[in-house]
Image (cartoon, rainbow, N blue to C red; front, side, top):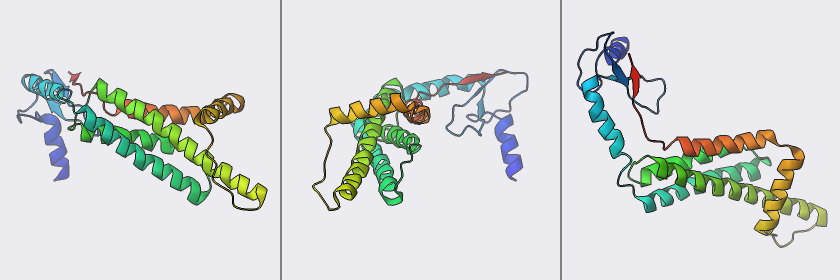
Length: 203
């Protein structure tokens, strides 16, 4: 039964149910599921375009920012917990942070998409990844100081300017390409996820 359902989806318009001919120009719906290929006929394509356009209008920007911050808080929290529980840093969590920020921004904005949400998600993700790095660094730095002094001490928060300089210096001196790539993937995830949907032609 599942095979018949897939075949029906491929050979009929996903909007009106019209049977699609192999030779006619059709359009593939933009979907988050890249394994799904739903097609619509030429006459229904305008309706779909209108729906996609609607997703980019009347954006709740306050909601988008708040939703993005909630996603960032969850992502940063997971990043920090992994660091302190397993005594290691897993930069790949940055990708998850970007995804959570984007999803939070999209949901809280009224399930919208578009360039404005991409910028919001990107900025929040940059701040979230930076803050996560700062928290993890502070944890390990103070842990090292405790071992060095042989006793507990007042938790030290390094000034952000000083930490930023150390982070940049480390990236340059260690040539941490993997770290930079992971950061880039996290930022790209945040930027690409809320992108406006577009129809693709299939003839």
